[in-house]
Length: 150
Image: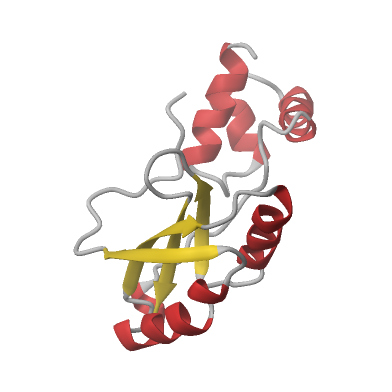
């Protein structure tokens, strides 16, 4: 990865819908070499995908929760089953396998505290191997970015 690749990535993080001609101009390449570099970055997995970021509040999704899960059994079958079920629930927007006091940390988004409570009772505590869930509610989002420090 060279300086031009890093410039491309900076531009795409800031302006993901910028036309290829403008990207090429800003990094000092012609259209075709710029396009090839972008395709290579995609094929190498550096660029995973492009996405539209929605404002959750404008869609009525106002509750943001970090749920810390403890798992009673640490066997491979249980953990794989839990991770597979997590994928099936769009309310879970992030999931991390953790070291420390909790085994998993999930970020769950809901329309209300009542909706989260139902999700907790019907889904989270029913996940394979879960022995406890500790929920922390976000009071204010101070920073959220998808930009990586390049």
